[in-house]
Image 1 (cartoon, rainbow, N blue to C red):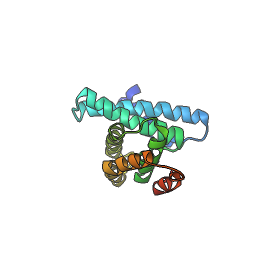
Image 2: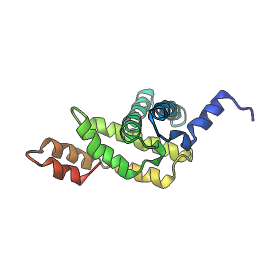
Image 3: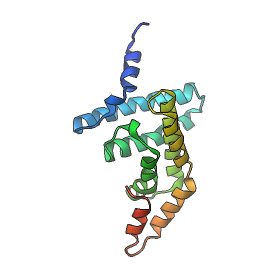
Image 4: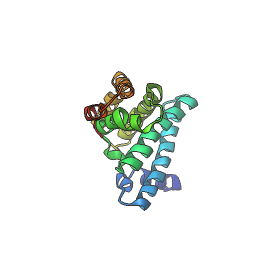
Length: 169
């Protein structure tokens, strides 16, 4: 098989060890790798899944926010070490407290993109099918996350502590 730049790039993108973050330089490198991997994910949605361009872009953008803003920037963790619990922390706490006007429509798009991304990762042996399934199950708990948003808006007095304890970061 002839090795091309695309094959080399895919090999680099699919090497989980390249996504370890130890300092600012590695964080910048991982962020760039993740961006390239998301472009491959987007192409997969368009070409293999035959999803309309606008919908494919929305799914990729949703996954992008979870991966680059939360996993890489906030948690500084390898994106392939994500668990359903980490997704729940993102959607049920971090997104809500980090967004000016958290809403379930925006969050739902992020969760759908995230679930599809980890299914793509399972297909490419970057994570296992069980992890992808658990992430999908958490992403489908839209009513739970809607309630978390509503409860956040209803906090009064010292109610934040109990709200936070229900789904801690």
